[in-house]
Length: 457
Image (cartoon, rainbow, N blue to C red; front, side, top):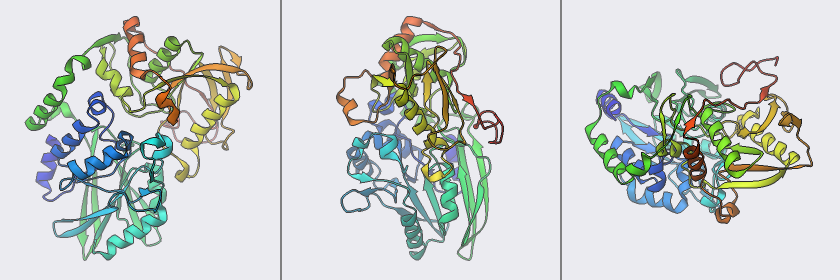
């Protein structure tokens, strides 16, 4: 809040854009149906936003917030969300704001695969999708209505934004989200009418993407972009925001502060194929549900804990607080397990960005496997083993997981994942450093998230 106020003071009229996922990801966001973050965003001074995980609060809740809480304060824009019956726009596709005498259109692009990556039952009467042709019409319409600058506020993910920038003309800049990429410098993408600047400013308040545009004769003549790291410990606290946060947390403080265990190793989530926090969740699932194999989603958020820190309920909820937290236990054949891994791998490594859904590879416990990211669909996963023995395609294995997108899971009686992991942590008391269960990589040099893709294995 302090940094934003300073930057706005140095740039009168500047717009603060929120790329989505703001109303979700913590215990208080879950328990207040996002209200804690909605009010925080208003206090922060957000001008325009689009969405993704916001939709997991349900269509009715999102519409209620947009019409009641955000009206006259924050514009919620999403050109690619339509009704399933007649294809009517659910939200404004764009908004035009005047910044220092320049008409700036901010077009919204919600996460295209929301009804696939998340439960469809949250948004049963809405369609999403990339909607490239519609995007071109929206951009053209904004230009026709006087926009001198067009900015796309996108939750596509970086790779999808890069492809869209090469195919849709008239967009000056794409301010992207979803894939949480902290990109130091924007990529300039050529298209048939000029070029588009594509940026992504990370996630969770780690960075602030600052874009200054020099507009002359109704066109962008030059730009300056900075990916500003947010060192919160070095900035004075904003008194108003601090008081707000303290008041919001007060009713839940005792529950959030419960000490579940102590970690002796580093606990983190972010990794292409696993993280120590995910490994802990997997081991808890297998132990508590007596499962041979466990799956956990490749989510990209959560608090990192240093060796010696207490694992509190708040930290566990940071990793798991979603609106469909149900734990599942199923008997799956080896062939079905392979199909699941292949489907997720194709979502990540499909060579066409428009078929990529972002996120990281599903985390796997118990099962060992190899993966070749650059192989064809259905042929990436090999050498599946359980306790040193090859997985039998026809044999059934007991598999635990959580965050199911199927509607029937809502009434199946599955425990919330945080209850399962909390029970495990209380029993363990001390958590030793985790040994990551990661696949053997073929056809790439090292981890694709760290090294460039290339030949070899």
